[in-house]
Image (cartoon, rainbow, N blue to C red):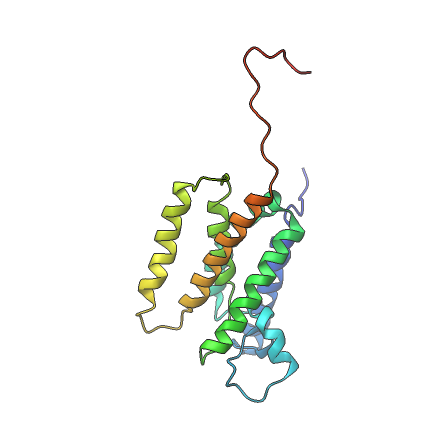
Length: 199
């Protein structure tokens, strides 16, 4: 028996985020600028600020925030990485990070930290794992209504949670799921009962 680095993208993502939280805890800085997407109104603008549009997914407000996100990422991520491949999953994570970070900066006057957008992208992407052309899985409908509907309702709450990042991440996950299903090769036709066995 030996350990296997079975989901390199998901595991590396988890290790980097955990290391950043250890660093933030040791230094007492839970809003490290390198790992936060700054609003457009934040001055002074710097290259580090632009890096934050992607790297904000590695930073978290506290350990509870980190555990909440990576509990789901570690459950869903390996299945998605096996299904779509490491490179493609990494691309989806980076696109989700960039769009949530950039649009948050343009639309809101607050910093964004955390991988919640990626979590919601994983949830909606995973709910489309058995999508076929011309069909919409009912599980996807229920997941979309439950998860995204809850975030729409939560927008009315005064808290430090970015429902916008959750909703955008979910929409991106749904978009990726539909797009990838269209590109996937059609499954082979079922063999007839009268057909001879194939060895």
